[in-house]
Image (tube, rainbow, N blue to C red):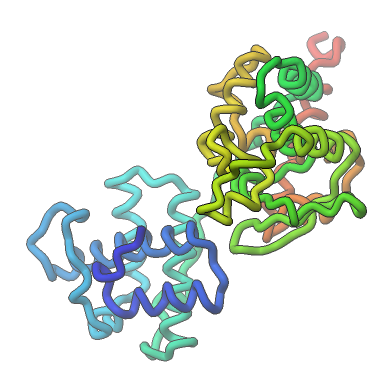
Amino acid sequence: MIKREDNPEFINSFLDYSITILNKSPNSIKEYNYDLAMFFKFIKMHFHMTDETDIKEIKINDLGLDTVKKITLDDIHAFISYMTREYNSKSTTRARKISTIRIFFKYLSRKAKLIDNNPAQDLETPKLDKRLPKYLSLDDSKKLLAVTSNEDNRNNERDYAIITLFLNCGMRLSELVGINLKDINFGERKLNVIGKGNKERTIYLNEACIKAINDYIEVRPKEAIKHDNKYSEKALFLSERKSRISNRTVENIVTNKLQEAGLDVKKYSVHKLRHTAATLMYQYGNVDIRALQELLGHESISTTEIYTHVSNEQVKHAVENNPLANL
């Protein structure tokens, strides 16, 4: 939870703008707040405005715009360098902080017009390491579904529907947990989910998904759903307590099913099922990269293109394993 009293007013103003105008999700707002708090704590150290040596203990609610106006691009670079040295920040973490700082100063200079110059205007994003996604093979995916389907427990239909949606639709964990009954259109075989940045998108359902959802709805509790929380009452997936299922519960379900299927839980996770769905669709479904971008809810197609790299790796592997390769 964000403690607004710990922030200077210009940070709270930016957070309000991000919520109301940019329509950012609660998670994004928390990340913005954390990144900016760390940045301005560093600035107080960097500008010798505090004797505190532990950056986490530095207070920033006394900062004014006069300090912000003194910040230069070199100061921002010094902060990124500090995070790398002291916290061993990965390139993805540094890229996120740079993005936050860039958006923040753009707001101050162009939207709120609280400062004349934008020190982050020429701030560059670090080159990101290209890592191929880990994913289940088609056979392992079938094995996971078979194990989940054959389980004999009172939550069998629910757990099977969860695994089926992950492997067929490539949705995020938060998207699956947030599904409401009204979001599903059985006639048109589609459902609406809320993705990153509170952006709504449509996911089309195949026969396996429709059947799994219907089988679960038949046994889904009809009575004694927690009526003190309408958020839970509307939910598709319910927990043992008959409230909306939590992220942690879904993660535990996936981990347990992976173990039962004999798959490495250190290698695979809920997010790896999203990678699996995307990879299988690209490899076997002849899916256009733009269509895959839309389905996965990626803002940039460069994020989606990682799945084309998977295919290229397979081609390379096939050539290297040609029996004539070592003659």
